[in-house]
Amino acid sequence: MKLYPDKLEAHLKQKLAPVYMLHGDEPLQIMEIGDRLRQQAKQAGFLERQVIVVTEDADWSAFREAADSLSLFAEQRLIELRLPTGKAGRIGAEVLKQYCASPPADVFLLITSAKLDRSSTNSAWFKAVDSAGVTVGLWPISAAQLIVWLSQRLIGVGLVADKKSVALIADRVEGNMLAAKQEVERLALLYAPGELSSDQVLNAVSDSARYSIADLSMAALNGQGVRALRILSGLRDEAVSEVLVLWSLVNEIRSGARASEAMQAGVGEAAALKSAGVWQNRAIPLKNALARHSAEQWLSMLSACATIDRQIKGQASGSCWDALEALVTQLAIGGDALMKKHPKIPV
Image (cartoon, rainbow, N blue to C red; front, side, top):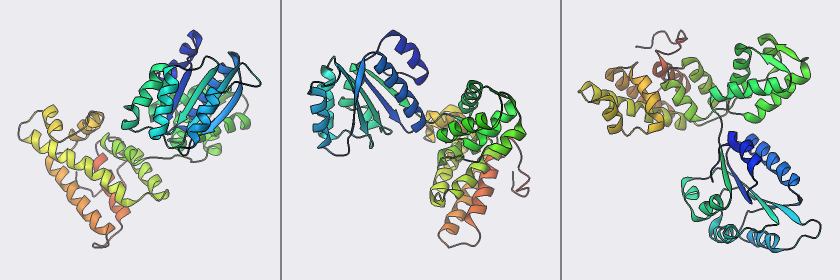
């Protein structure tokens, strides 16, 4: 069965499944939940541990032998199977299906995997694992979830922080859960238990935030101008290609322009978004942006995208990063308006 991370403890109080699979692109959660499952397996008597990393087809023979062999040191064993690529391959798919059809009673299997694509989660081998045991998908948490997570972690080490202090930490570690964990541990070492001030946070917490291109477009669409500009700066510092940054923004702006023109022609908002090919997970942010911009403004931003494209190719003068900053600001106008940096942008 599929299980959400926050439901794991309640599940473990009821039973221990023979197979668990952790998959996703959030290494801290995979590490911590993996540790929790190892602890539970040890308590249940699975004392011997063997780790098998699958990087090629031949490695599946090692897994098959480990699963079939008798233990020399313990009656019950923990086998950790690691899939760094998230791909089982043809041979691995058959091995996992056969194993999950009748899991050995003396083996506790813990599979950890990189992020799985849709074809993998729809595959017969993944469904076999899910049917025989438990699968847990682990993804980077949102900014709002990070605030709650940090507050709980700080309380766990005896520190009480107000909303401003927690927000400061979140800004500096967003998208990097390992850094967030390390910063909480550092604060616990630096300061005695009790209240934590924003000045203490500023002095102690380094800027370890990591952002994705999707974070940028979502922040801009939602009118979070300050955050969008901070994300853009972070992407530039990480040497993310300006082509990819522009591509992400163009997709959203083109959808906005199509939907806005349809609405101007009398089409309802839902139908306009559908006709523009907007996916459900982007509908709300784009609705927020549609409320701030007219069809003419969307077309103006599309024109700006064309200019930035020429700048990237060296066919137009000016800095493409400065132009991207102006474009992000324009797209986000109408939200948290710290837009004084570009007062001449037309709205």
